[in-house]
Length: 199
Image 1 (tube, helix red, strand yellow):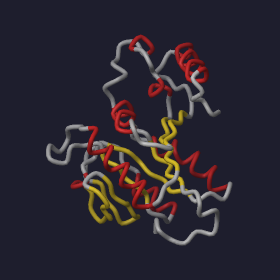
Image 2 (cartoon, one colour; image 1 turned 60 degrees about the horizontal axis):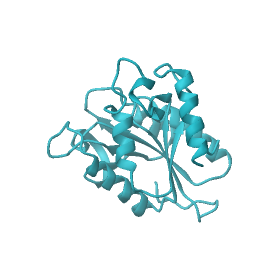
Image 3 (cartoon, rainbow, N blue to C red; image 1 turned 135 degrees about the horizontal axis):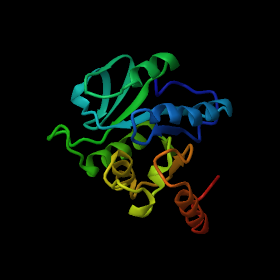
C-alpha cells in the first residue's frame, strides 16, 4: 500500500498527479516512472471532477480524496482509467476530487485545497508534482488561447486549489494543440525571468 516500507531515501516522498484532464494521469506516469528509475519514493495520482461518493471499493482519507486499488470502480461519467492504472502498477493510486461534495458536480476550490493538504500531511509527501499533458495550463492571458476561456476549465480549477500549498510543482509535458506555441514560449520566458522555471 501507500504506506508500505520503502528501501530508498525516506527523507523524500513524491506525489506525481495528473493536473486535471482525463488522461493527465497517463502524462503524469512519464514523470512517475522517471522518478522510479532514480530510486525515488513516488506515488501516482489524479485530480478529477468525479465525486468521491461515485467511487466504489476505495480507501477514503478525506471527503475529496481517496486511494484507488485494482478493485476500485468509478461510476461517474467520463474517461476514468485510474483503477486500471492501479492494477497495472499493482499499487494504490491517489484520487483527488475537485467537486463540492454537497452539490455533487459543482467545483469549489476549498474542498480540493483541503484534500491536497490532507494527502500531503497524512502520507508524508515532501513534494507534489501536478502534470499537464498540454500547454493550456500555462496560459497567462485570455488571448493566449483564442475562442476559449482558459481560466474556467479543470486545469485552472486545480491550479487555483494549489494556491498557498508549499513544495508544489506545475509540470507541462508538451506545448500541445490547445495553445498558440509562440504564446507558450513567451509565458515560459516570463516564468524563467521570475525564477520559476526548473527545466
